[in-house]
Length: 151
Image 1 (tube, rainbow, N blue to C red):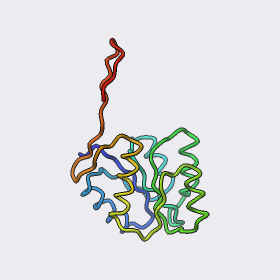
Image 2: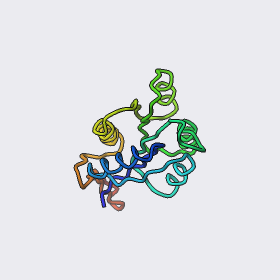
Image 3: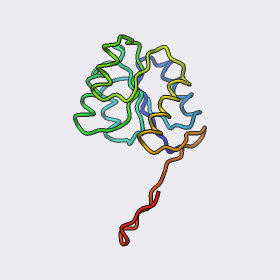
């Protein structure tokens, strides 16, 4: 199983399945949810490197923007790529201001979503590369006695 875990929040079941398969072939383990409460519950129980967050109204219960505010207010620093049909400048600015790491307007190519996730993880999580079938992370060794570390 790959080391890179992605939480995919998608209201369209078919699009969600296609995206899951694409991301798994691209080296990610993927959990897919279809409502806001599932997102928060899964984030509490599974450590994800990144979340693709849908803001579309087809996701019942907790909206994507409220989910992101809730995450950030509770100290959850999971990297978030908003992928939504909402393309207005105000939506993009608002989501970036409350803690999204990037924003893609649907329809977008799955390769673009994947590249966006990889770029965020390279910048923020120490992921060196993501290749089909495996995610590679930088590791750090720390000697507590000598109080020295090595990356």
